Image: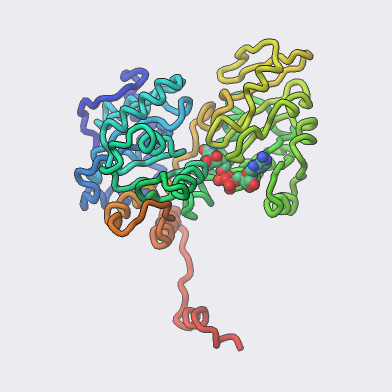
Length: 424
Ligand SMILES: NC(=O)c1ccc[n+]([C@@H]2O[C@H](COP(=O)([O-])OP(=O)(O)OC[C@H]3O[C@@H](n4cnc5c(N)ncnc54)[C@H](O)[C@@H]3O)[C@@H](O)[C@H]2O)c1
């Protein structure tokens, strides 16, 4: 499928491309639904000639989405959606082997991160694809001259959808955006099983700690938090949940976890993982209460869940003891360890979600781009959910690919479910 076209972009080292290509091909094997969509896209060319910019975590799974969009006819550029989540070999391969201009370097500073987003916007996208809404935010605030050319966009994650709904409410949003995150085949699986497994993978790869017997505090019992807590329990950890929502709190209790305020959890935890989408969830008073040796990390979208400036203020020194494990020496002699600079730990110190789960998330992305193109004339500048028929179709294809079959409703059952007179 590769074009070997020399594309533009800004990556760490183009000579990493061969390694990246092998990893992209490995991920592709675990993305059967996306493969089916790609086959159809090659034939039907639904995105032919459409300029697209995708601001996503530049991973092997994203590469397969990008190749699918390109094969569907899109004229695509890619940039990173987080300064620490880029896989440099994947980024190199996207340019060298697949001819897709890519702007992303792992560890880039903030100025480079935004310069890369600006480069993607220079492509004058008609469709935007975001993970966290940074591309659309830059477009709507700094590059307003581009708005008239935009048909619509898609958004991958909870935090991005929250930002876009706020923009829609105050009239800032100027084109329709499909909330891919809100598809059931996205957040039921990606946020829960993907974040669950890969977050613990990140903690383990960074620290090599044995989780069995440790107290793991998970802040937030939403889709991601449920997954992280479930997998930490599976490792034999004693899991404590902090929440602000009573329904989520009672769910966590009935799932067998202890629920308490962070002020209490801070004294007990060995490892802290935030996944709330909120800010300052772990702050000065919590660091002051922690045991020496506590490990703190975040798997929510932005690096604001842990108040890092407060940790720095409490500390007399800092050193990196392992890659992306910073030891903060507190003035009273205790040590607190921060993973991945407080950025998404599953992407910073591991490889993000496994391909099998991104298969469904990115099937939603590809089909949503096609849907936007077919329907944008009827859509308003607001946030839309992925149509239910697409969501169900993705679940059906995934089940098929895994060799599972469902029952079918009989005619009598269909009638029974549709009629209020039945059952009397
Ligand atoms: N790491 C990843 O790869 C990945 C994947 C998907 C989503 N995300 C991000 O993870 C975050 C959570 O996503 P989600 O889908 O679980 O959202 P969600 O809305 O389902 O869950 C968030 C939970 O956090 C709780 N919460 C809010 N403030 C809190 C506080 N101060 N203390 C304790 N709990 C609090 C909420 O009540 C809610 O239950 C978002 O930022 C999302 O973008 C990350």
